[in-house]
Image (cartoon, rainbow, N blue to C red):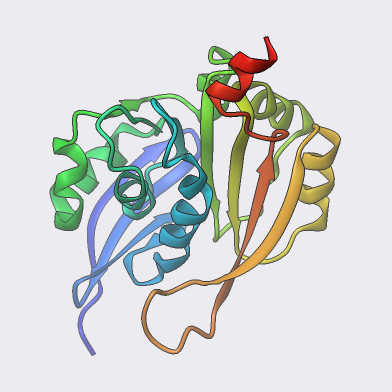
Length: 226
């Protein structure tokens, strides 16, 4: 068996973060609980595709990515929306995680060279409070921990989105409580199951909730209505 090597660690207000490696596979842990793994990033890639494909024809789409993880979801988002006018904001409060990705995740090198990407060292909720009605999509991943989204925060996401904008939440398993919170915040929700890994037997499934703020109205149609 290949050795398990701890590459990095740091202490934050949330707990102790660690980056481990075994046979080329990277794992990000918080207080010993896995947060992200390069082997099971297939669901992140599919979340980006499903959430951002409707925005392909948008002139200047703005996407907020809540948490960098190991960079898989952010990198996929760039590939789904290749147009140069797209903007991506990565909300990552833990600065060390960004440094670890730059140093150890070679596959994310293009992420840091892309001029459309900006990293903010605060939470996605805090970012959204200052961006009412201006965001096209928000991507959240909670595949290793329960998403304890408060109604107030769900409403903040709702208010930050444009009409037809999507809040995508990736979960380890179905969560009817979370669906109820999103519905009370005003979202229309759909739920699907995604394979956790892009390759292999695909026995592990993750749950994707796509929460939409109303219907997207193209600019030309809005102009006709006014």
